[in-house]
Length: 230
Image 1 (cartoon, helix red, strand yellow):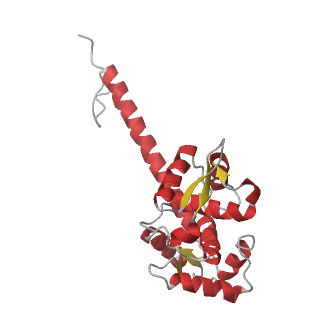
Image 2 (image 1 turned 135 degrees about the vertical axis):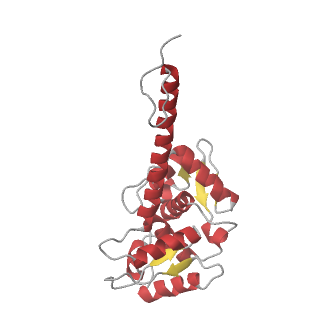
Image 3 (image 1 turned 90 degrees about the vertical axis):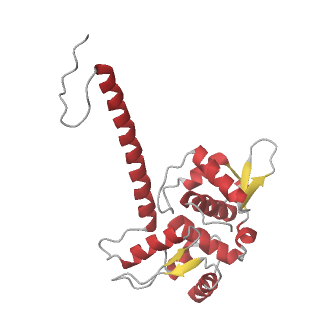
């Protein structure tokens, strides 16, 4: 893998892996099905609202790293994952990574339950063996987070999104149960802040344009009265 994935690239890859196992009759996925899978309101953390264009951009990014490709179809372009070869890991490891990409950090027991339809592990020990193998790779693909205060078990997080994912996951692990924030919530918060900043910039530009048309100086403390016509 040439670089870290973006959060949306990770979501798209996770959806392709998941749907390959759960809905084989409609796999490879059309763009509409892929977008719907990314924007699911269940089994997703965070819940997002990605557009067709955003998902296509993410697919192009995955294709550039040989993690996805276009499937053959006579009518509709469809997309497949190439996670086993692209990440150079076994299919059981791909199932675990997909669950982490789709649902955020989880305990070994949670992972075993959540990947049941993708890969059936004999017991939690088998899950932990696969996770430890991923953690011991170079570069590591997963990390075991410090146990959060009050939590019974530590959680695992994927590292496919690089240092940002690691930092966010570590902050989650160190937070108290009352104030804990999921990695997905941190990503969603960053997206919301970006959206608000863009809206504020657009509103400021509108105010400046209207002030110019009315002959008003928009500077703080300026006289709000419009300039008399010449």
